[in-house]
Image (cartoon, rainbow over all chains, first blue to last red; front, side, top):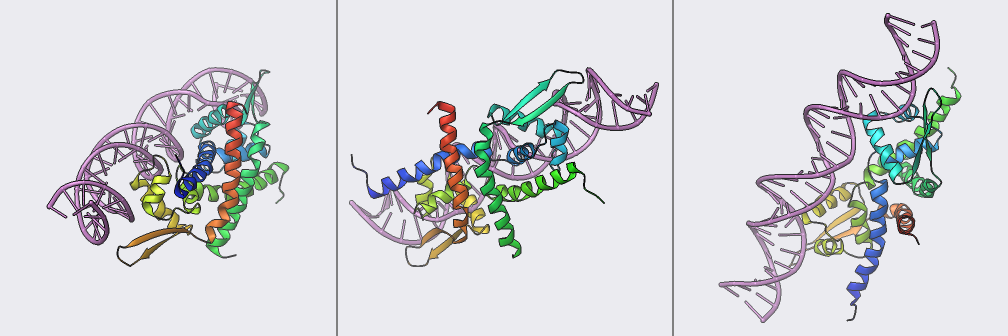
Length: 118
Length: 118
DNA sequence: CATGCTGCTTACGTGTAGGTAACTACCTCT
DNA sequence: AGAGGTAGTTACCTACACGTAAGCAGCATG
């Protein structure tokens, strides 16, 4: 079987799309990246993170933190001293997302200018 | 009024988050970037785009295309010859998203390796 | 004149993301 | 003992993203 020009175009296109879809699954949604940003800025405790992100609520935060944990992007550390202290830290692996976050940030700034004039 | 150290941390953190939130609003969701990728790969017609993206359906595609149009990322061009031909093209502005898409792609590839070993 | 392609739209349904409010269990401070 | 902080959980609700199936108008082809 021989690929037509159209087919090879679609193959390249798919090769581009599938990894993007994978990435979006992890990154997409209203909160995940914001939470990660907050943690990377040094907010480690639940309430700290909650306060740092305007209008997030504890239920959503708890759920998203679990998600980030299963994606190996944050680690939940329980210090069993009393009082119990719980910390969330960004994993080594999560730093691989920094470039993505940087580009999103840059584009967001640019988009704002595009909308409201520079 | 004087900023405490904690405050200035939060200010920097917010400054990072708000543009990211803006960007996510445009980029987030299952389909937008995939559709844009398809169009940038040279798929111009509705059915062409539909076929290029596995398991998308025409309702979603139509809606997302409208969204991308209002965000000025694609342009809908009607050729009034007979038979009527409709083309979707990526705008100049949409190319500003290429870096974001590239990073998402790169990270997606990397993440796949992370999950299934290289 | 039937079949099939294009570019959609419509009706209908489900699932999940996200929001609100209240509550708990534990600890501390006064 | 009461007020207040931490780290969530629970029940309930809503809205929208997304999916399925079908249909339609216009054109072309055998």
